[in-house]
Length: 250
Image (tube, rainbow, N blue to C red; front, side, top):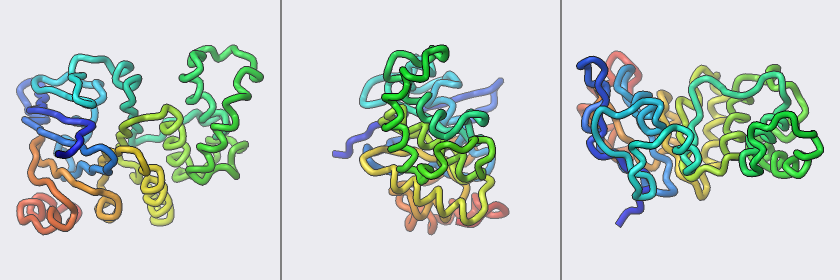
């Protein structure tokens, strides 16, 4: 029997009578990369917002490690190990990559918000921060100003800060959005590398990336699940092909 780290049961969200998400039953298997795809307006980001409790479901249940987390707040969800990255890179541009990762590591020390602490108090975190930067290919840029890094490098840094929070489940929201081919390839390789012994649920428009990374795919259309399965199966589904007509072909 499959080991599901995340499940939703009849997850639904309405906005003034409009069903943005309707009866979504999602099952994310532990240790897998699971992609959530669909045409624009299919409800993908709304599902992410429901999972991380930036939105409250109108109906349905969310289970993480078999426990009901439907009623919990965003901070509680994050503390349980569900960490999300956003479409727009969320790093401190005036700090170095090393400082960004070191701040993320502070959560485990109990000094998360004590920015007035002496820099010496944070030195013990520096080794781990450098390890994480090395994992994402940024160790050679540890002392640069983050705001001056190329966009793809900033996204890699965001993944490093996500890993610093030691997530059980990583939610990646459009990790390659707005990137050129070289950066797309770099981030694709990075996601594959950091997925070892981790579970990733990702929203991604680039279907080449999806076909390369995803063990399983869920296709949304108008807020409901249209199809599920491995890429080879989903990409031949006539309903999926029709849903993508006029958009990006599967």
